[in-house]
Image (cartoon, rainbow, N blue to C red; front, side):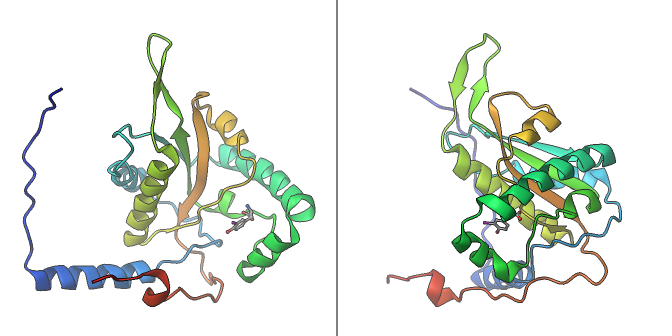
Length: 221
Ligand code: IYR
């Protein structure tokens, strides 16, 4: 079997330049926080489009690109999503959640109220394509869909952050209702709901830290 290739020889920066860039990137990345208090100040569509293009550059299993992004600015649709999400979250917090889970969430101060869905100017619902529906009615298998979409969402969150925009990865459970509201086909499963906007004036975030490098990494030389 043969496959076609194209040249790929990106410019190689001097090592000190790489160090400068990566340290600056670390400073920027470390300043990111998930936000639950959004300003409703508008954000132009082209910025959201470019962020989604960046997400679409993520690597994926067998390069199947098993993702779809629905970007919603429509107030009525956001209101509908919030209504269903809050009903489900109320069930979660009041009935379904095991004590241990609620204890893990306590430092984050979350509850069933999901104001971010209606406050943020955009909500991006990300879908995972479990298979591709072929024009002849057949199905083409995808691979490592969950991992691939996770990487794409990582790209998306980081790109938006670098543009000064806040996000909150929100996964109401169950979130099948998002497929109906977004009118997506049966081969797609909602993966995450991501409000996008500026933090509200007076926004606060939980006082929590990050694990240090020696906690998250092992080096073997
Ligand atoms: N889906 C609920 C609960 C929740 C779960 C996790 I894991 C979080 O990191 C935060 C919240 C909610 O959105 O409130």
